[in-house]
Image 1 (cartoon, rainbow, N blue to C red):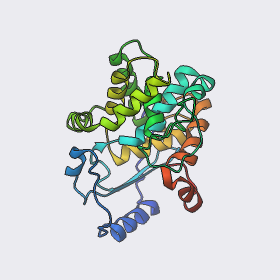
Image 2 (cartoon, rainbow, N blue to C red):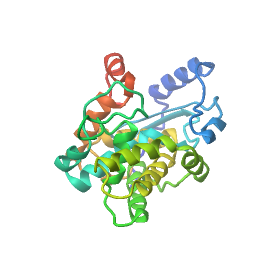
Image 3 (spheres, one colour):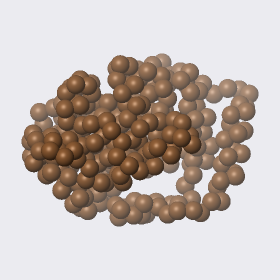
Image 4 (cartoon, rainbow, N blue to C red):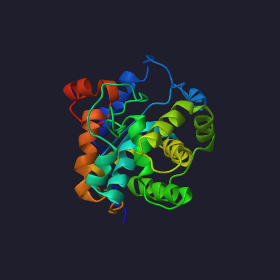
Length: 263
């Protein structure tokens, strides 16, 4: 059953979101991402806001249904899948939970052990991808897609152009994969694991999808629109904890101080 509701009377929440959208639509600060060539093609005027409640109410304005690739937002969700497949104790042997204050692509490994500091930086995310269960890379990829689809409430797919662009230019991530293999954090050839990581980052989503995913975490792992369990509730706290302490990389402390929510 779909529990999404659309109130007949216009909600004051929509009024507020529309006000926010108008207020900030003219901003031209910053620039689109260029570290992956295909991402540079994004229209900087795309701007959507979506708020989803744990009761299944969806409030959206602007370009909330414009598709883009999930990129690093995939990390906490794949980390959750790794926790389900391996237990906390086993995952902690491979991936730490300490904030680094480093950039997302920093090669931040514990001295001696080679364990990534946390699952939000690329090194930890690649290690998490390597902990997803499945004998074949295709099986792991199918399970990732199924997991993302449960969170979103619809089938999701791969943006092939972004994936190919990321794969062509992802030499630093391949280097991280080989370092993880050197320390036996990865116990198999690193290339298929890094390729899986490129694919998870290239899953196509919308602003609305991300709102539903956030609401699912806030709802103890149950998608509030479909009623389906995307992750066992016992692991949600672990996901939110590392998002809070590490999810904004070198800005995580100030984000938590100023905003106060996991991100």
